[in-house]
Image (cartoon, rainbow, N blue to C red; front, side, top):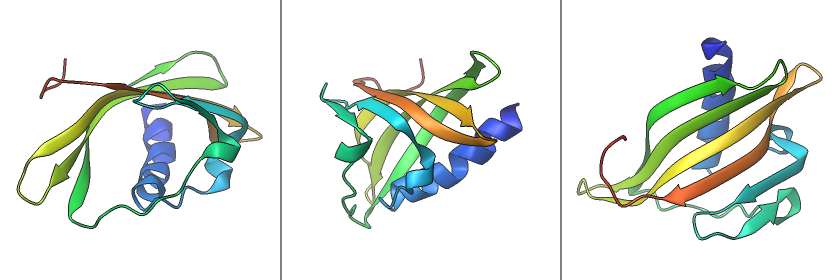
Length: 119
């Protein structure tokens, strides 16, 4: 199961980094809560370009199988600049649903973090 989770997350991660999130990754009833507390849906998702001088760092990845069709993925993220500084650290949690043999993002929430390491 871990291989399946990582295989679905890697293409999603790359497209998210490029801010070209493909519609096939978002469930028709997708909903999210941003790190500022704003609720958004599939139609609200904004694709904004990201400056090239920063990298998204992901750590502390864990997954939990909730049912045959649902998996929760949790991880911490932070942007890292060319000078090595980090900002916008967040604890993230996503629920992925298997729909017609493909995985789609059903729910995502980000919570700001002030610490610098995995908890």
